[in-house]
Image (cartoon, rainbow, N blue to C red; front, top):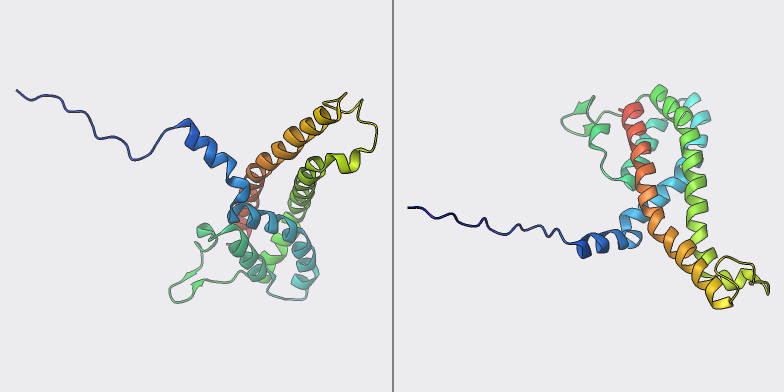
Length: 183
C-alpha cells in the first residue's frame, strides 16, 4: 500500500516580509533610477527629434536607442524587421517622426509627474527648512515634532515608496508606445 508523501517545499517563499522588503527596496534599485532618467530625457529628446526627423535624420534609431538604454532590452521593438546578422532593422525617418510627435504629450505628462513626485521627497523630509516659524497650523501640528513627523512619513517616505512604482507603470506605457511606433 502506497502512502501519500508531502510535496517538497516550494523554493519561492510566499512570505509577507519578503514582499514588503521587495516593495521597500525598489527606490534604491538601478532600474528605478534608469526609469527616472528616461522620464527626464524622453520629452526634450522627442522635441528635438521633430525638426531633425523632418530634415531626414535617423531619429527613430536615436529614440529606440534611448528606450533600449534606459528601459531595458525591448524585445518587441525588434520583432518586425529583424536582420539575422545585426539585430533589428533601423526604423525609417517617418517612424521616428511619428514617435516624436505622438509620444511628446505622454512624455510631457511623465516628465511633470516624475519631477513633481521626486521633488516632494526631499521637500518633505527637510520640512523644517521650509516651514518657518508657524507650524501650529501645519498638518501633524500643533507641535513641531508632530508636523515634521507627519511630513517626513507621509510626504517624504510615502512618495519615496510610491514614485518607483508609478514610474514603472508610466515607463511601461512609454515602452509600449515605442514598441508600436518604432518597430
